Amino acid sequence: PARHLEKLRRDVPLTSGTPRDRQLVLATRDLAQNELRDHGYPYARVVEAETLDATGKQARLVFAAEPGILAHFGPVVVEKNKSVSANVIARELDYKPGDLYSRSAIQNAQRRLYGMALFQFVDIKPIDPDKQEAEVRTRVTVAEGKHQRVNLGAGYGSEEHGRIDAEYRHVNFFGAARSAGVHARWSSLDRGVRLDLNQPYFFDPHLSLGGEAQRWYTFTPAYESVVTGAKVTVLHRSGPQTSVSLSMTGERNTSSIADSVLKNLDKSRLRNAFIALGLDPGTGKQEGTLSSFGVDLQRTTTDNLLNPRRGYQVAFHAEEAGVLLPGTFNYYAVSVDSRSYRSLGERLVMAGRLQLGDISAVDGIAANVPFSRKYFLGGASALRGWGRYEVSPLSHPPTGGQSTDGQSTGGPPTDPPIGGLPIGGNSLLAFTAEARATVRGSLGLVFFLDAGNVWADFSGMALNDLRYAIGPGVRYQTPVGPVRFDFGYQLNPIDGLVIEGKPQTHRWRLHFSIGEAF
Image 1 (tube, rainbow, N blue to C red):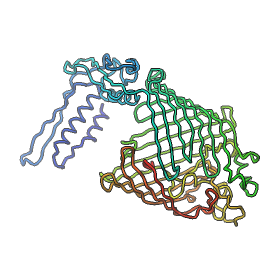
Image 2 (cartoon, rainbow, N blue to C red):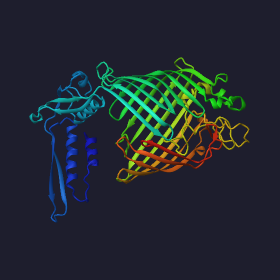
Image 3 (spheres, helix red, strand yellow):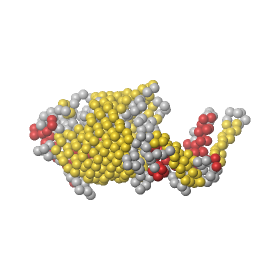
Image 4 (cartoon, rainbow, N blue to C red):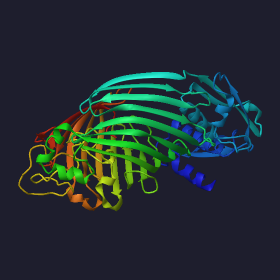
């Protein structure tokens, strides 16, 4: 096709006026040859002819196509499978008999089969290519792996301190490549148990049906949330880079004010603040049911999940709770998470991340949004000058700090020290920029700038109200991802911030974890 030919001309690695490189000549030939094989010509060849000018210092290169016959896919043969049926394997293929031959379709099918986690080895090749038949038969050869797996992990981070994870997974649950598992975690920040079930072929090779049930605890400086419920998701994956999903969630949400806060509730303006957010002042709890519809779109072009050097990721989420479905909570929510990576030579990568989020309570009633859905910033991945959950609207207006509506105040302090707790907000804006440099071998250095804030609602969002943090970091590459040390320094501290009953006066935080910040 004309647009593919034009793209091929743009992408060839050879450039006039540069020294002739034999490897670039071969790469150009292979690029053209693969383009033909992606458009119905499995036996295509590309040959190059080279002539020198009179001086012998310039080479003229001509690449000529020998496409061969136009061919279509024929029957598929599956070999070496044992407990996984041939039908299960064949349905994951991106092509069927009669389709125009495409080399990319074979590669995508191979990736899909590997992604099922059922096989240690997958190979798809044409049968008897020397015969150059118009109907290309293909052979799928697999080697099955273990279908039941147990993973145990323990770790330590500056935020969660000790962490223990345990997972059991069956990747061929009752056959048909159905997967099921149970995952448990315990840490000082969150803990719980989550069950999941996934049907990879749901009427169509590109559709899957997933189910999830959980009981999960999350701890913040002001309160803890308990979520008990289930979620059903239909996922459409058009390719390895893009997916769209529709989900329905049913949960029971219970949030309890921390004991240290509850003891001081009657003696401070915390009482009015939490009542406005839906707290029962008698029990110190917010309880209710959440029923919602959700839509998610994701696209990623990054070259590496653990340590990307180029490409981008975009995730969009929209949710409607309680308006069309019965439930205690009623809100609309939308969020975007965008990440970009650009390699500048072999040793430097520039990375950026933008996060936007807003939850709109129906009728403007704050109690229509559960505590478990509220936004916070701070920690090892966002605004690293603060600890996790430390950046959000505060529980009362401290001197020069933030009120519960996210606005700065300058009144005298009249509350006991327990005030000034981050209680979460409904609107979020955050931006991060990083320069990641490889120093030597597995050792790297990072310099970052983080900016962002959380507000009580969208009307309070203001660019002149952002919090900023800068700092250096150290990275050491390991097989499970980079070990990370970050030192974050606050450029504009939050006056009156109180964590665990103590005013936060130091302007720096040290973070240790595994994996890049984003």
